[in-house]
Image 1 (cartoon, helix red, strand yellow):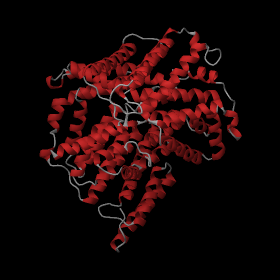
Image 2 (spheres, rainbow, N blue to C red; image 1 turned 90 degrees about the vertical axis):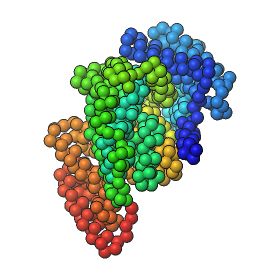
Image 3 (cartoon, rainbow, N blue to C red; image 1 turned 135 degrees about the vertical axis):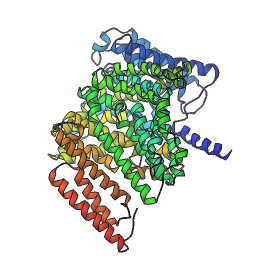
Image 4 (tube, rainbow, N blue to C red; image 1 turned 180 degrees about the vertical axis):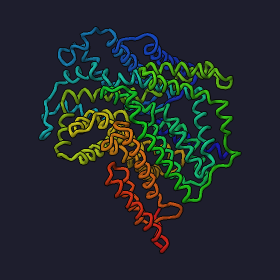
Amino acid sequence: MAAKTEEAKVQELLDEYEKRKRTFTGRTALIVSVIAIAGSLWHIYALGIAATSVILLRNIHLMFGLILIPLLYPGFDRSEKIAIMDVIMVFAGIAVTAYVFMQDHSFVLRAGVSPTQGDIIFGTLAIVLILAVTRRVLGWPLVIVTFAFMIYAKFGSFFPGMFMGRNYSLTKIISYVFNIDGIYGMSIGVSSTYVVLFILFGAFLKNSGAGELYTDFSYAIAGRARGGPAKVAVISSALFGTISGSGIANVVTTGTMTIPLMKKSGFRKEYAGAIEAVASTGGQIMPPVMGAGAFLMAEMIGMPYTNVMIAAILPALLYFITTFFVIDLRAGKDGLVGLKAAELPNLKEVVSSKGHLVLPLLILLYALIIQGTTPIKAAFLSIISCVVVSYLKKSTRMGLKSIVNALESGIYGSLEVIAACACAGIIMALVSLTGVGLKLSSLIVMLAGSSLFLALILTAVIIIILSMGLPTTACYLIGAAIMAPALTQLGISPIQSHMFIFYFACLSGITPPVALAAYPAAAIAKANPVTVSFVAFRMALVGFIIPFIMVYSPAILLIGETLKVIIVVITSLAGAYTIAVATEGWFKRPLHMLGRVLLLIGGIGMIIPGTSTDIAGAVLIAAGYIIGRKLYKKGGEIVG
């Protein structure tokens, strides 16, 4: 009974984090379910079977968001019952969709030039609806940022200095936003194609039993090692991240199992929560599915998604390997052991019973990398293969219920992205209309002068500030629109500048004081979320250095000569391990603080590309290790 009570408390905390999304029974549940299934089937049909027009696809995609979010996410009253306002919002969303559907090609051409009265009425309604559903599913921050850009567009002449702009009429603003360069622009376009299909693929993969395969496989290969449950969390989150692309989804999926086991094996509750938050955040940077931001990046820089995915492989591996180092050192320092063999699944049994479920993921990789197909086609083929492959074993066959669950959860998992991308579309249109993006880029270049490093620091700070309230997708989009041009002006390639921004947007999940991935992890661990976020930040220190390596050494993005790539990988791993030793203050025995400081600086030196920094880093590492041990032997204070 006590165990059930504890589980209930954990679930209550997770429900609170997820904004208490409504659950229905009876006829209402059936109606909502039918709408969700229809949404998923529409996307599969429109993207994989019969091609449709761009504006129609984006219009219908947004419609499902405008219908399902008011039904599933309550308003200010937090009522579990559907209210009159919810119904009004649903019909308003259908009305906006119908209006856009009835327009001809002139709808695109008259944007911001000669809008009709209908454009203004339904454009206003669309903007209000998008802001309302965004507030429901993502909270106030993105809504407030959108309002700020709208105020700037309307009252630009009142702003001082270089930010002084024009005062655009509401008609101009609404018309410019309510079009294919705004609400129905690139961001919702990516959401309606790549993102929704890959989320559906993840849902099908999970419902086929692949999620259990990844977890069991992780326990089988790492469960017996010291700190085994924590290492399992890293491996399972990396594997699950390949199908989810969401740090928070990783936490609530894998964390409910790994965090209690980590605590049971001896990890402090704050450390157990931090490990899961760090590992789950890495899911967003783990190929082949890296969340909506990576698909948007490919569109913004005009590069095939496969190239973006390949460029992200080494940084993602470095991130997870470093996390593995930190866990291993902490387990050694605290004398923790792994789980007993009797508590773990048998590797041979796992592979023989569920190993075939990895085939859809291999098909996805084969289609993307070997055949060079589009991500849309690759995702479509992988979704179909999930069902087909599941029938290779009787125990894993996807019945009608599993398929229905996958269709439902796929569209539900897309709702946050739909809201974020629609709201980001409003912001992108206003950035283009007012030219504020160029002004902010010019300001960064002016403040940084000719110093690329200073420009990178300024960019990182701005992204971290934006990430305190914005989801990864919106944070990346706004950051890329404003700051990527400034970085490219200073001589780095588009892929480097966008990757730099994307990484810091992803790491927002573990960046204090607002670390969204730390909150559900802390809820499961029953720990203080602020403490969890700071421990996670310390653990993932190398993750905040990786974006700088991308800029100063493109070899880590697999750009350049093979020898340089190999050297960067070796020195980066050596530096990462040294930083892990410094942060944990342990290498076979505790180290003095002075030695840890030298190790930290030396590790950073090894990570920074260049022969001179590598030599200096190696010298500092040797000195730090010797001094750290010598002072400890003399009774120096241990800090860790």
